[in-house]
Length: 309
Image (cartoon, rainbow, N blue to C red; front, side):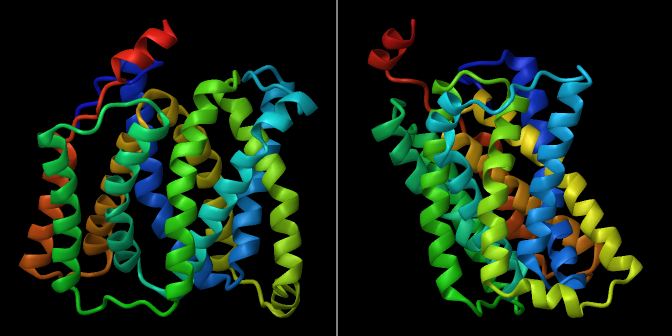
């Protein structure tokens, strides 16, 4: 994948950001699926991730290990929609995982770069993708649909959450990219603000959905505790690398990276559990990887470049 055109970090920093995000994102979907399977309380699993990220950021900041700004009202006023958009996307994501399999979710996600690329042009001042890049986005969609046609386990039990996720995710990709570029914060400060401000919102959702009753009646096991702790640790890592990658690349390219991560997740699924994946399904995944590899993000339009000088 060609990351040329990232507006902030240099090429080495952008590569580290992208690779770190890809590693975390590829594993996170599986970890969340296992966490929800062993602990059927998705809001609580997500809340644990938010609290772990906020506490880790604040503690490391106080120790001087990382640079984290404390909460300030002026910054909160500029940034508060970001945690709302982030929480909406992640909550809908984890609800989909509760009712559908990983491959099903990937198919719906595969169509988002087509919409995000247009929003990138309208709202963030980038050019439309080149002919090659449009073809690559098409390959991503074709490959994902091809996988579904070869996957007998494809299912959707909650179309409502799919629709909610698609709308919120599309807004999330554009708006958070805008705020990452316009609100001056360190990456760890962005992580701290996002998770801290989202925590009370999710806590109210947890109470409202009745998950406290589920938790009160739940019998904890070593497996449920292990996957909860693992998901919390992964939440800290992916929060950091996602903001780092957002700053390094365009919104469309970030979405393409995310889709590629989900394809890698399917490969991990095949290796770990699904030993009977069809040749057609694997070929479809290969098509996705080819499309992602040759995609090149659109540069800023000349008028926008002049405004940023």
